[in-house]
Image 1 (tube, rainbow, N blue to C red):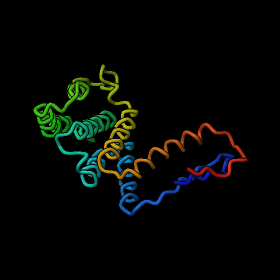
Image 2 (image 1 turned 120 degrees about the horizontal axis):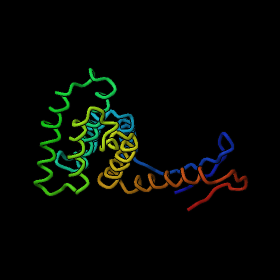
Image 3 (image 1 turned 180 degrees about the vertical axis):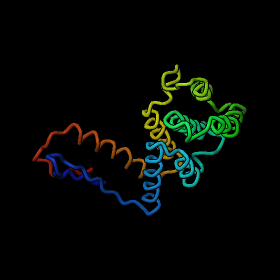
Image 4 (image 1 turned 60 degrees about the horizontal axis):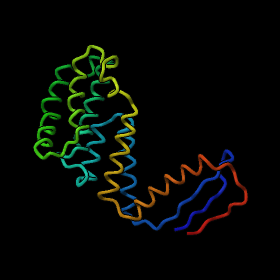
Length: 196
């Protein structure tokens, strides 16, 4: 591994991390990036499709993380309904709870794979429908967009832990270090390179 610190625009330094990655590892990076962007933008239908297509081992339909993706999909549907009631009908929301979240929740409960957090999530997600204004309800926190970032991070961690080669996992960690260094390091003109 070689880390090269070079000047970039705006008086910051960029750290280039050079690895020999095989084509499969690079393809995984693209899929993880697309998956993350889909979650962050609230396009959970696309995110679920990407997750189950490209990382099926990490997202079996009875897994807690798959349940969380579907729960977030429901939350996004509620968000759309609140913004424009004609976008998603109340009947469609109830049908989603009954036909999608319900069976996943039952299967996960039978396997004892849901944590107390996930059991509470199912209850709270369903409670969104009990309020005329979910954004002003006791479960309004579910509509916080920060939840998208947390879910995207958890999904990425599951993929990294389950299906990504060790060298790519190290790359992910070093990219995080890169971001931290770029944020913390003021321009230093005498750093040429660091070899490990």
